[in-house]
Length: 368
Image (cartoon, rainbow, N blue to C red; front, side, top):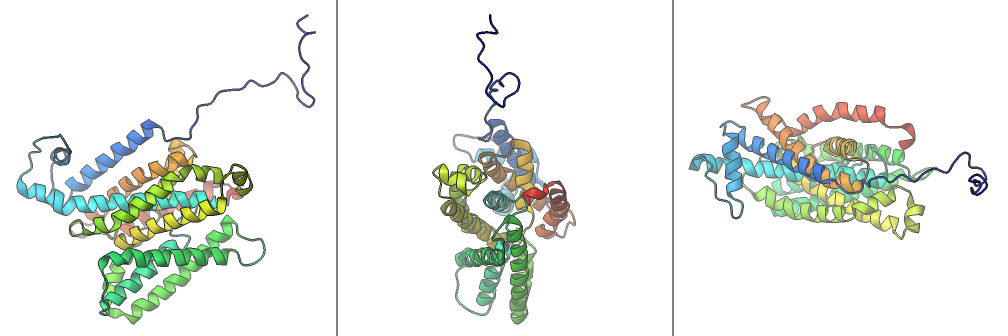
């Protein structure tokens, strides 16, 4: 009787209908990963401030930092000289590393989402080289006697970054087949080589500024006070606000332009806005810290493995883990050859080059 009353299965389906399984959405960054990111950032800050030519007690540094919070009154046990080392010498450098690392990681994750390519990175798409050329032109012009304020440097780097991105986009569309992620990556490599050659020519024609330019090209976070932090902070705030606000649209873009348009999204407008914001953040980071590579590849991939593929999780967590990563890389650069100091770009390259090869080996061919 029960068999007679059973509704026949639809044509083409074998066996009983599948049950709908409720799955837990993975769109948002889970609180435990946010907490882990904040914990890693806090530990990196304490270590970055405590370790140096003059060692400071980590607990005392942590209490000193907490003492400046509202409604908190704690005796850190540090004397006046140690407190000045914390607030005037080391903390500005650590905060700058947090901002630069967070921006490079955020830009890398944004580029990977826009181009749907796991190898997309400011260093590979010509954006960093364009920003470097713009900053080099500014440095050499200032060394030649042209009046220019320090705050104009990020603007010059931004102009170069946007110009390089447009050039990469144009070169990637030349020939049959149109633009695709692989062609854009190859176009970025070509544009990077061309801009690097122009930059070398400018350096040779301006020997008086070549030492400053070389120091900047290798990446450095040596600061004197909070000036560099205040210079880059507005650009970082604007970039983070735009990219994090549009992070849901990146998830929609991954399904394709036709499907995104059907969902009410304007793909090209969102793509251009995200690229402009990521280029602004990259330009600002490059202008104060030089060319620091591989942060935009390493951090978003690690976050993707830990927290899932949604950019609603990847982007905010990349800001946290990217900042902590660069603080620890800068710490290693300061202590590896003490009393000397390695360029931070060398440290990130040592970590990033093997990681880049690993990403290439594990990425499916169709994703490229």
